[in-house]
Length: 123
Image: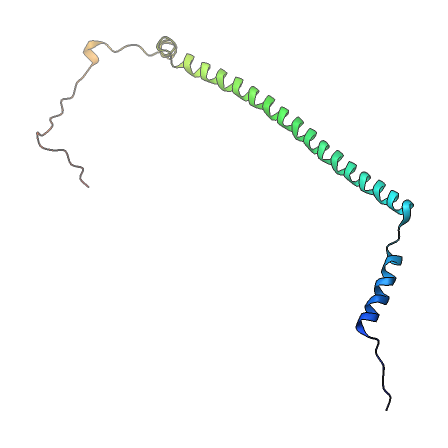
């Protein structure tokens, strides 16, 4: 029967801790390279964000221009509607169509008698 001897946990932990610094030794060149990479990444992110903001600004300006054009068109249509609804222009169109005012002999009136009671809707 063989007996296995295990290292004590504290001694094993000390050995592992002694090995870790060798894994993470970068030196000045490694730190400088890491700093350069970090600055490059941050610069790229900053430029990408600035590009997006500029693009959105151009899109906003274009939409504002379209809005101004549509407002002008709406005002022109409102003017045309108001001009078409004037009574003198309506009378002019009616005479061009061959219509004329009714003579008093052509007028007929209808008399509608209403009951004095309340008015109720019926089906």
